[in-house]
Amino acid sequence: MKPQLLKVSTDLIHSFSARKDVVADINSHWHYHPEVELIYFAKGSGIQFIGDSIESFNSGDVILVGSNVPHYWRFDSITEDDNNVDVRVIHFNENFWGSEFLDIPENKELKDLLKQSQLGVQIVGTARMEVARLITNVIETNGSRKIINLMEALLSIAATKEVKHLVSMGFKYHFQELEKDRMHSIYNYTISNFKEKIDLKTIAEVAKISPNSFCKYFKSRSKKTYSRFINEIRVSHACKLLMDGKVNVKEVCYDSGFYNFASFHQYFKSITGKSPLQYQKSFLTD
Image 1 (tube, rainbow, N blue to C red):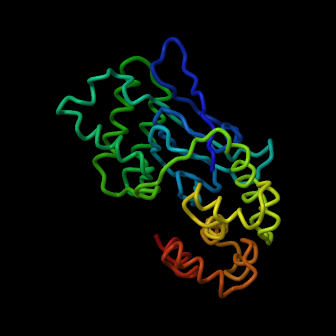
Image 2 (cartoon, helix red, strand yellow; image 1 turned 60 degrees about the vertical axis):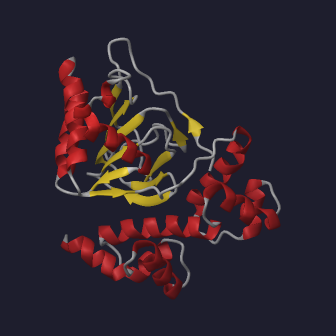
């Protein structure tokens, strides 16, 4: 998938960007930027794409995304009257505090964390709310305190072992300009139509290449088959429905784009490591 380069805005009185968003479509496309991103979803849910990872995101999630790692958060359908989006996000260049700052011995933890951020770091333990609090403090404060709060947030992440890496080791990003429109079309069509049956002829027409060429083309760019890609999106959607607990497992199966319960069970377990029912029970009892 070809991500777009995003220019992160700052102003003359701040060395990095920290803001609160209440609109779901802010930067709602597959993109990357040289700045590291630290994001807290105070309100909001949907499907997140980070590198080669596809998962659900929900209110309360905190994620650190490294420099130039492509990502995209697709929010669930909402209307302008809904009050269901509250996202606090910080963008900072790795050397905004000075080119030699990270090389001093005392900052080894911080430097190591920024290297880890290339894999996408999701905070899943008790440190999550502390980091969320500090992100909010970064947005609300100024001067030296703003930088101190950012460092404390990053050090809290570095100190906890309760994190999950989202991106596969060795994942490579493809930024060839000529592929942008083709991969963007494939990407958007799939996430808009994953509940329907998408045959090879249809998606090849979207990509404007022959069906015989499509599978090889997609795998060479995304490092996974198209079948795996769409099933990850479907399973991610299923995870959210299971966490909501409003419909039974069979209803989840069909609402997620699977037309065979046995196949749904197989793909779900291969991707999450649990059966749909086990996943739902583990979430509801956590």
